[in-house]
Length: 356
Image (tube, rainbow, N blue to C red; front, side):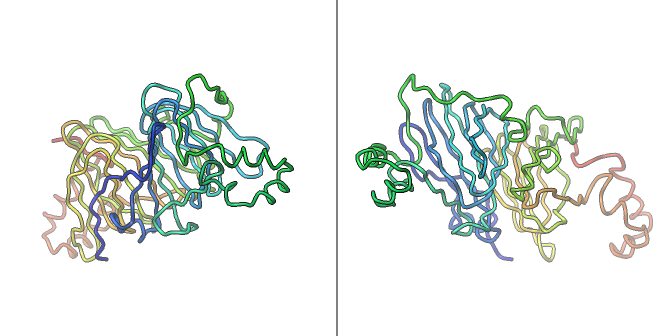
């Protein structure tokens, strides 16, 4: 595989007073098309509304900063769920689900979306279908069809179809009353990764929160797993690979560090410094490792299977620890003493190794 794995930042696609929509393009990040993966962000200003739309792809949404309100309509439900959202919230969004997003706060609301484009119109890109606005589905039907379908008068149809000149993201007037979120609607829909119990907690090393079918059952309908990983200053994430044929898509939330990816025939496919805003993709079965800089590093990843399995190459659970000494000695072509020295290291360490 000779595909450029260099991390990339998103580019603005459209925007206005209410906010902007950003996306990663397969032309800039070829692994998106290779892995059938899409990635985008919305940044909403105060009173910014991302109008109702549905997507051709299943996604995981993660709130990078700010707080606001989201409306989620699951097909065949009687009513939408209206939930409050804040930094650290993760949501699983099956394809075809209708959503809207609103920021009532003075601070910017930024939401990351990553997902699988196997059902999409374009490999590596999300296609959004707007319900309203100048490019909404209403505008494509003739007046006759809209009158018949919704039992409306012709003048009302023209008002509905022609009044909203904006597309995608708009800004509503100050004081406009939006639906109030309901705490009960968050149950089963939203999981806050910054408040959830830690699945891994290594002192001075790092912490992991997993998003899977156990922690958020809706993940099963999306077919994606996810995790939030935070490693401390100078610490290292053990080299490892996904052993269930999954791609790993990683967005650096904050901090910086170094990352290496090793692939077929032991060739290093990427060695680069990564920082907040970077997104990169680890191909199936390729091994990856990261070391944080002095401020530590935090990343959010999706994995293209709902319950991912990782095989670590270093630490107590390393595959090396499970193999027989004789096999390692012969395979490395080293003395028994060298093999024993190698085996004696990292006996108690888990997947994160604190700074020396």
